[in-house]
Length: 131
Image 1: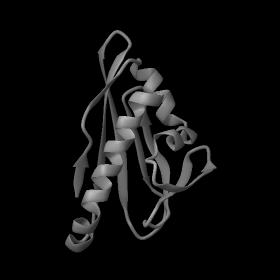
Image 2: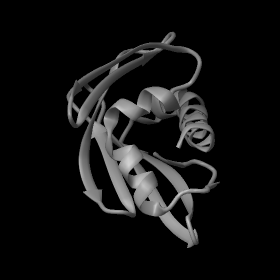
Image 3: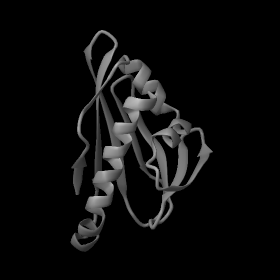
Image 4: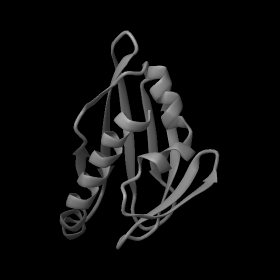
């Protein structure tokens, strides 16, 4: 299953956006209002839970400054990744898109497609407010 957020334009350089997303503590500011729990587990790992959903641990898997950062599932039963693509669009301007990729059975994919789409859309929307 592949999902992509809408592209958002930020009044920040790609390096500034990359630095923000590289610090896993900052993801707490991007989370939706229905967050139940957020806990930093290390320099490259955090746990979060949304109401009605299981806890998810994300770990920084790859970073290519200043254009790409990849977070992936750290343990658990589900294998997926969340990729932030950062593209320079002008002087101190960047476009950011989040992509979610996961390998799920059709029933699971059908159940989580809506909530995951809304989740990644909320993350990029909140970037406009906090980055």
